[in-house]
Length: 350
Image (tube, rainbow, N blue to C red; front, side, top):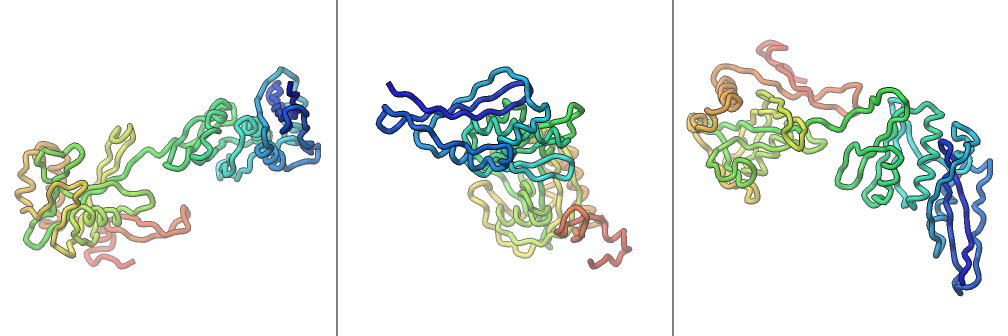
């Protein structure tokens, strides 16, 4: 019969002792061998050494258990001496941000996470953010059992959140809006650039519509409008201004939507439709576009027609982009406003 050599580590949280028990058998299946000492003392502050040993010892198994006990220190100070808290950076709102970059056994992570929360609570921290790359998905269940919840996800990571104080949770919610653009492009013949889509709600309806699309992360509205026209029709354009915008709710996976209708000036006129999304594309007389039953049916589309005509025929002024600096970012960003009325009929160069 094989006899295991045991290794014990423990944490103390809220009256419980969480034990980490490791068992290892010798290669000859008969003689037990003992792992080296953990070297965790009252002066130790680096548990990464322990974590590495814990992960890499050949044939080492782990399990977790809990037994009732009275904590030595209600603030978790003894716990911190044995397990170094997760590496974290302070945010601007009294919380911490943790990005897990190295693989970790889930039982070990549970103990270190408990230790970390105990220290952050003692320090008066508020919100805790844990960014878990997709390759560390084994740690998600551990964090959820500790009280974390899903905040948002991207293709390569999951962001979890936790609120330490007893009072009201003031962590911001996930992003609430998606941003879309539409492009009004008219040539000198008063023809507008329109498309028929072969995907989505307009597929097979025969409706001719302006090129539209979604603004990518980190992309400016003015850049997105030009890009969408190029992708769908191969027509080159220059952004002029935002003519109008609309906010709607429960548009995409329960998220709200902000749609910007933009005026673009054509720089080329030959059309080559995007095969993957566009059924047809052409230059259409504006009056023919406006007379479509679909356009006349809805107030939104009728207002768009009126605004576009007002821009071309009645000196309507939209919002032009101006690069500005601000306290919110080290990089300049676009601010959109009516420059003509702000600075008189002459406009302004910024």
